Amino acid sequence: MKYKQRIVLAAVLAALTCFTVSPAQALTEKETAGITQAIKDAPAAELAVTAAEIVTQAAKKEKEATAVTVVRAAIAKNSASAISVVSSVVKAAPATAPAVAAAAAKLAPDQIEGIACAAALAAPELADKIVAAVAEVDPKAESRVAKAVMLAVPQAEAKIRQRKSGGSEADHLGEVYDPPTDVRPDGSPFPTTAPVQAYAVPAPPRP
Image 1 (cartoon, rainbow, N blue to C red):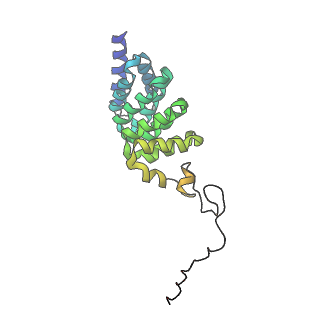
Image 2: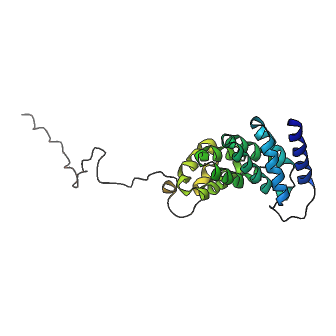
Image 3: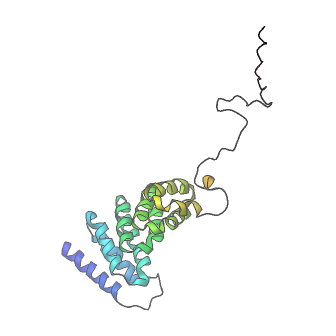
């Protein structure tokens, strides 16, 4: 079985390294089928390694399409591998990070934060774009995904906060901005009149 898997994988890699006239970011049905089969035949423990190997060997203009196809096939085979496969694939082809994270988040929404963090750690310079791509898949998760990625990749915090125009950064990231108020923390109001200033009374002269 393992020998058969290696034959299929070798055939897929050979096909992907050949020069093709396919448009950028597009795979033929045969290539897609070959990748899917190679992933199906790979042992669960080797999914991440196999996925990265396939992406590494893909032609430059087909890396993103190959990466997305690999990730989809891997998660379909074993959803528990989502985070490790995303990390491995993005390390092999960092530029594919946003597309890979989005594809994985769509198939494994319960792992959306881990997926975004794995992609951001593998391609920190694209952390803000990863958050944006994942947010398109699940807008309701944007706040927690952004926070998780900022914790994982602190150097990307500024870019993530500035990513979306309109609205305050605090509101966008789910933080609450408390405007000035006339009420003390304990609920009692501040005095509306200025306090009376006390003046010192001079002592009477000595006889």
